[in-house]
Length: 61
Image 1 (spheres, rainbow, N blue to C red):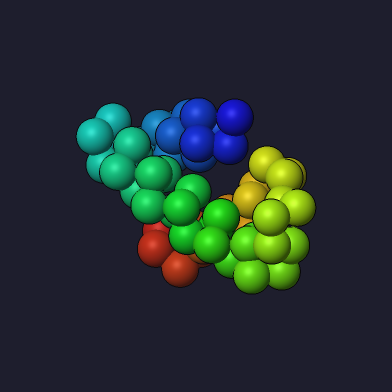
Image 2 (cartoon, one colour):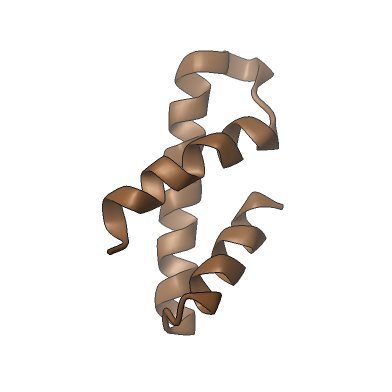
């Protein structure tokens, strides 16, 4: 699950649990929106994960 991995990764970087959950939920949705623009209804979790790094780079130092 992409969302779970995002939360876990942020926690490992020292982000507070509530903030990690909040940022991961937002980033997962944003990455999904980006993937949808390219893949439409044929997108997979991998497509979302492929966009997640770019999205997180915009919001995490």
